[in-house]
Length: 97
Image 1 (cartoon, rainbow, N blue to C red):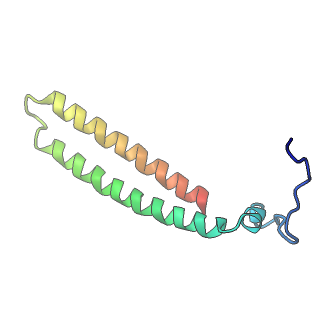
Image 2 (cartoon, rainbow, N blue to C red):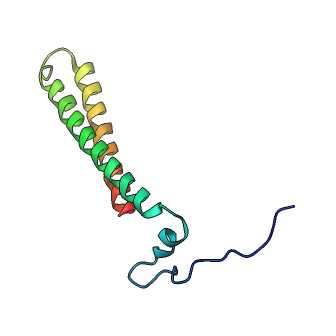
């Protein structure tokens, strides 16, 4: 049977008005550095996605005005999806900070 002992939080680990999530870093070892490294990794990925988005968008320019409207539409859709991914990554970075 599982123990139903109450959890004991470290002294002074409660959140404050300035940082209501301070208890997270105080109770789980390495969470603060883990969040920081995750945010840094997300920033790198977001930057790479942004660069790829630009490269993909540039590929469509060659075919604009040609009879390859299907290809242009597919490239623009891919570029749009990469833009959405980039924004979502930036939102995750803000959440981590």
